[in-house]
Image (cartoon, rainbow over all chains, first blue to last red; front, side, top):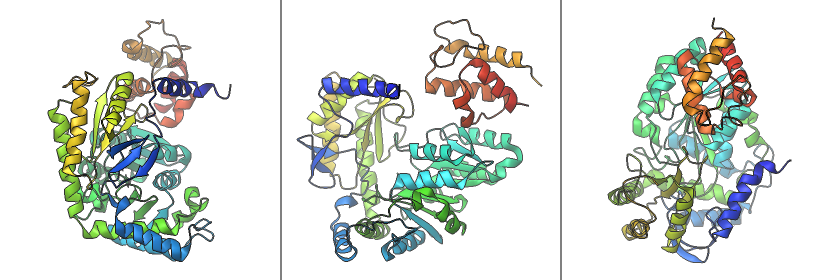
Length: 400
Length: 80
């Protein structure tokens, strides 16, 4: 039957409804600030938004969006290939290329479209792609469409990558290696110096997704490659405007002039409407802020360290190092749902993550930190987790 | 060149720890439907095979693999 494959999900939805909990697609009824909103009738601290620098509510970005809407209208009503390339889009492409110190950039309507579209297009039948096992769904989606031979290497394991490059023999020199800067679910940073060293030894092209690391890592906020000092080894960088830049959209930048030809081969670029001018304008404003205000990154990392240390000191199973994404790993699905509900009742919204979105069979209470969080808000989040322990929902020192 | 039966024998032994239902394995045993491997367990199993034969098994072939016999044939092709 056509619908049989959806039965497991339908059963899960029914279970959630019976427990009067709605962790997926929880409706935000009002946004009060970059870090507070009213979700499902409850005023909560937003600790699961990826709004790393809090720029979604920056008055300069809002003003830029308002002005652009007044000047350009609410939408382009067409694709970049047709009538949808406004001067704003072109200016953003120039500015994002300059931000990364390269000559070529493509702006996409979403981050998913950027990553999926580039992965689907760069390699094709006869080519080979090596991707990190924990890659984002947009990457898996893209490589599946590409028609290329797709080989996984163990997550953040340069030795496994090297082994697989060796096995490719002469083909390694043309392989496309795909990694991410910060991995979205657990917040771990890729070992890019070691991955770049493998690329230097065997050849190939390195494609890096900086969706969660742009604006977060690196001296000027370019991301994990800048922080690791390996930008020269990266052939293609993709990222999103929907996290540290506080809007929506995506990009690819490259030093390769071929990107200009590739642009007109990407379905996800050609056959969708371009971003509305207000989005492009707020993104341009946010990009200027990221470049000019490194103190935002400092504040973000202060908050990240505060939350990480706080949860760690409670004995909760968090990752090996601090990151703006702090995930508490859980084993039991039912308990994880109870914890998510209890956190909401304590006034804290986090992300509930279930396999296969999580990188293992574990469930996650995923927190993302913002520079806009106050120290008091971070402490409230920590206190909410302490409440889970008091309520007997979590026992410290091990995964549940 | 390794014989098809040798690939099968290796796959049987490699599956031992994951064969929780203690099924009698044959080339027609389905990895997911019969043994009940999760997607994560399938990938762990694939890694064992890759390391043993020093090959990389592309993800592209997996949709065509249902049984142990299907996998043995694919591994033999890749290892030629």
